[in-house]
Length: 276
Length: 364
Image (tube, rainbow over all chains, first blue to last red; front, side):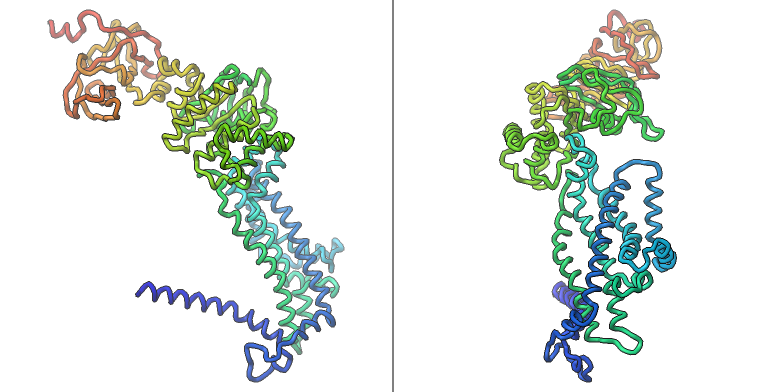
């Protein structure tokens, strides 16, 4: 009797939590589908009475949304590729190779991550101007790499350190080169870690707002976050319907990616590498 | 097939010498056991053989050729790790085929080799499985298969049986011996289990504290231990050590004469193996402190003014703790060690002749 009550309690609690998280998302989708007059109705309804896709059409045909979307996709993909390649190689070095100053480097990397990003904005901006990269997509890729990389390095280092070195040594004895052992044995083992790192980086680059605001002020290189804000939100007016439609479309790529990679993330974690 | 030689091999980690100036050589086709307690440096020695660690000093030679700077993949060796180190994302067949794949062996040839090894190790039915779907014994066989598939000139085995249960371990022991006999390759086997070393090897190197304590045949290290460490490490139950004194050709323990000896006068440490102790017809008084019936025999521990010795007795031995007995040792099997350094004195002992000091006292 008591156990059943507790289970009910937990259930209720969990559903409450889900509601808390999901409600704004549901509201966002619902609003994006409502005609303008329903949005500002004095008796708000959860579901649209006459669902419409007009806001989506407006966004895609009459505004620069598609351009921002392309910019965001480019920036996030480029950042992810750069970060994953650098982090995998760097983490391998920090986890496996023995050299003087290795721990110092690792701590220094962590220290970088601990700096609040706000303090880096102005110096980074000045550097970009000096490099002639201000107002380019590259400047954002570099900026995002600079703060995604430390975390990625540590995540992957921990991950790789947990993979027994003996299986790489076995590969070396079996005739693999150092790189061969890395690709044949370590990389497949580290794949779940690499995917989480890529995911983390992509989401970070996709959602970033502050750096995008400061480093880029030309409309043709703006990513979604700042692009949508400057386009739809001004001091006098907020285009709620368009904003909600834009928000839905911004979320879709992340939802798709997560849905695809979730299985991958779980798979492989349970792999028993050596008998223990 | 290859002979192996170490010359002044030393390995330092920071300021710690893990392996200290080891010299030894085994002929081609030998089964060499590196035997010692955990942390004695035997695994480091094996890893240097494999090329996974670089020696700080000294040379390693295969067939008279220095291989210090040859990377692991080109040493033509195979290794079985204690943890097996199977590739978790590959099937059993892929695991076994990997060394061949890395050497550019053609697919058809590879498949044939895998099939041959799988049949030999009874892995046929498991080829499509992944390592985590196998039992410990099966994983061990896959690791062995991965080593065997290539026919290397030297096999390195790092405590490959330590994760198996007792039955499987003794089975694998005899299979490894049979395998060695069949393929005739040089094998180097690291173990802390003296039974494995004694039963499998042609050569045993006993290592302690990174130093080679003794190198010889299993019979050598058992019958003529070079020092107290080797004597105490080899043999079950462990050799008993007693404080003794040599006076005028007599070996005395707590005032009783144990045997005659050729050793010089002074304090010595006496090593007595359990099978060399006889209870009943001796002259040294003791009390039974412990009786262990092992099944086919009984181990009886005796205590007295001399210290403590263990004796092998018949299975139907009726002694119980507290019994007063007298014991003697087979004189020619006693081991004498320097009291301080523990080095074997290599002095022969012989049965007691004539009256003993205590007898004389009693006579007087």
